[in-house]
Length: 191
Image 1 (cartoon, rainbow, N blue to C red):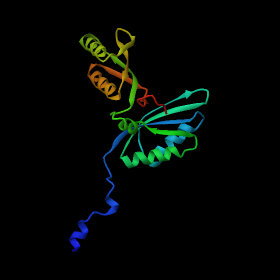
Image 2 (tube, helix red, strand yellow):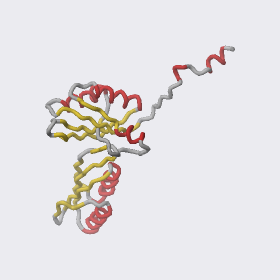
Image 3 (cartoon, helix red, strand yellow):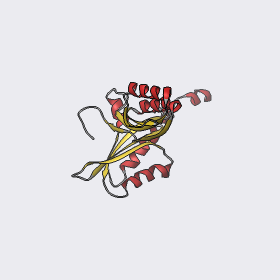
Image 4 (cartoon, helix red, strand yellow):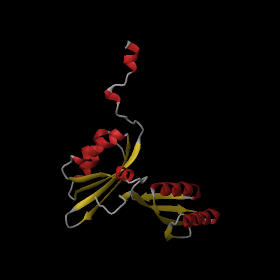
C-alpha cells in the first residue's frame, strides 16, 4: 500500500456522520416551580452563547408544584444534544424531552405546536376591509374594535402567525404580542 492509498483510506474516527446543518428543535422541560429555576435555564443558554427562539413556562401540575418550560432553539445536532444534556444536569430539572426527536421517531415532521398572537391593526376604508377579510381567511378573531383600529387574536403554527403578520404590515400593522410556542408530543404517552 503506498502513501496515497493510506491517506485516502477511511479512518475509524470519521465513520460517524456529523451534520453541521442547523436544525430547529422544541425541548420540553419538567421543573420544580420555585424561584430562580427559569433564570438557571436561561443562564445555561446565555452563558454558552445559545439562542432561544421561543420560550413559554407555566405551572402544569399544581399538586406537585411542577412547571413545564417549552423552549424552541436552533443549532447543529451536536449542539442540540449538548444543550439537552446540560439542561438534564440542572438540579431543579426533573425531565428534558426533545419533542422534535420524538416526533421524527414516530414518522411525524414535528410535534404538535401552537402559538397565540394578538395583532393590532389600524386603518380605514379599503385597507380596513381587506385586513378584516384576510383575518377571516386566517380564522383570526376580532377581540377589540373601534372605527380606527381592531385587534385580532390568532392561534396556529408559528409559520401561520408569521405569514399573518407579514400580510398585515402593509394594511396598517401597529403592534404584535405573541405567547411563544406551546407543544406536546403526539400519541398517548405524556412526558
